[in-house]
Image 1 (spheres, helix red, strand yellow):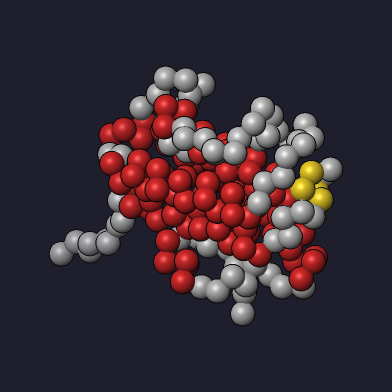
Image 2: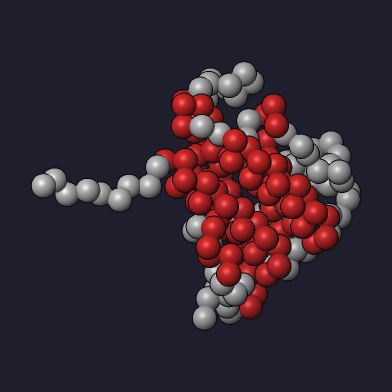
Length: 171
């Protein structure tokens, strides 16, 4: 008798890990000092930069929703902005991205993962999603490092959907 493995399909894993990644946006928004500076930009701008590009690439540019408060170059970490974005603004944008991403991932099929989509720099849907794991992880890691320095507490980092039940900081 051959042994059976209980293998989870790829899309289930992608969804679970993406929902965990998205929860990290919520966590950094609730734990960091949004006005603290890093690389000559306030932390809110680092978070917005990561959110903007997650919104743009994760579900392909065709599904980009954008933030109501967006203005020219607000997403650029190389250009100073004359506006201030609040925690509430970012949380509202996060919710729009969360709903859009959930709808997109729940309708996605495994066959579609390898499709190269128009306006995606010849990347497949899977490459767009995976690329955002690297990009978001880098930026939110920087923000969390500043939070650790400010508070002496280590923000909890979600890895999967069920991690959203944990508190904001490691215990």
